[in-house]
Image (cartoon, rainbow, N blue to C red; front, side, top):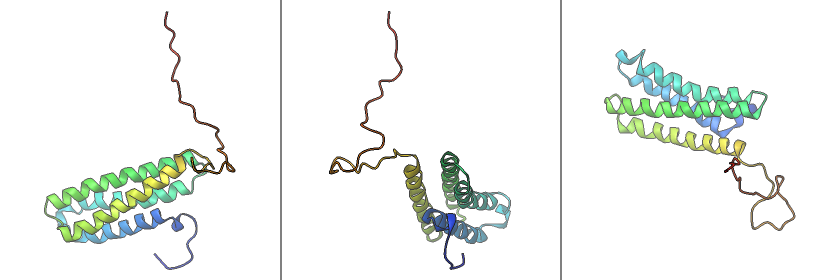
Amino acid sequence: MEKQELVGFKRLRVWQKAYELTLQVYRLTHILPKEEMYSLNSQLRRAAASVAANISEGYERNHRKEYVQFLYMAKGSLGELETYFCLAKDLGYIVDKHYSPIESLRVDTVKLLSGLIRSLTGPRTLDPGPKSSGLIRSLTGPRTPDPGPKVHVR
């Protein structure tokens, strides 16, 4: 990626990690056997590219709910990648020196993505917690336990 001022989704650390992961997967697939060109090789590349693509596509959507849905699809692709990496390693196509760094990058991307999802789906409040001075109050008011559906017993 060119060094320039980043705007939009490109400034997101999670997108940057996902993009780097995609580049690393493309580089890694060059060492796979030729007979894997249209199977494991292709699946690895598609899953990796899907992560950054879903983050960027969701970012460009109009609603938070759509954005989150695309982030979950990106997270699913990261799970897919984990399986393909395990296959490649267990079949002897890649060794630990290639597997460990790319798996570490995948795990870092999962963590960042999970954090972004939590930040977009968690409660929206300005109350920093019980140590608050009381000057900032929760937007949603006090939390009360949900009693669940009412059941009529005769």
